[in-house]
Length: 338
Image (cartoon, rainbow, N blue to C red; front, side):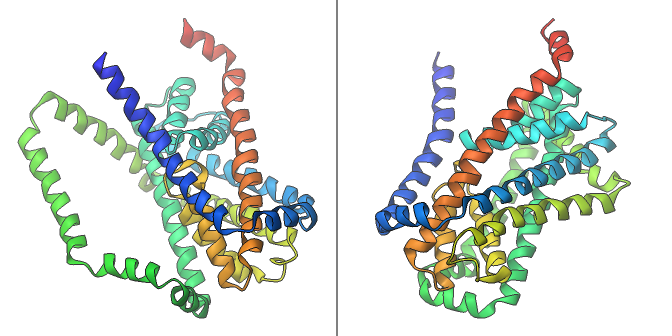
């Protein structure tokens, strides 16, 4: 009973603490805005047909992600159906919207259920998937920085506390001592308990994950992996940037501004909170204000785009993916149930 209670409390904290944090940030953002003005903008100045035009690019990006995932699974000796991969990717983002970071585990579980690929090996491929995304986001941010040095100087001039925090972390000796200490502690724990059953199971689990990670080295179609990666992020960028033309005050900012906002918004979406709520709006508003928009205009853009794309649209295709998987695999579901 105590174990179940503890497990329930852990699940509760993982779900609702990040959400509470995001909503608190969101409340402070809303408090700083003239929300009547924001509502007026959303009623009169937004071309919602243009935002609707952006939505297919979100789906293109997720389909390309499923195709890239297939390339990582093949070297493991498994050949899952493309439709199952696509539905699981759709569902992944729907689950993440309710339970941060649980979607990755859910999609691995679903592919294990319907395609019999070991979950631990799938987790390794998901790690590669996320590492690839991290590298691309870093490259986008670096490219945006190189092409827009004056903007970043202006941004940090207006937000000195942000610069001070980043510099303080990077320049602190404790930052590097902490990294080294963590590594040494992990090695000592491993040496101390390596012969115990629990540690052996852990090592086996990590080995299976490593097998999944190694698949990128055994891929024959590396160029195709790069192509799908490019398709994912070009689609994501267009998904976001097309929305600039739905508002009279962002349509003339240009793709450079779009690239900066997209890169910074992508970093904000990595915060483990449902749909990046709070963090995404804060970063997008700060970025657009750096390009001369008023706080209310920037707020209208951020709230409108997030609500339509990250909340409504992601929920719809996420639910579609979750429901489509068992329907498309009726026979396999019957066999599993038996």
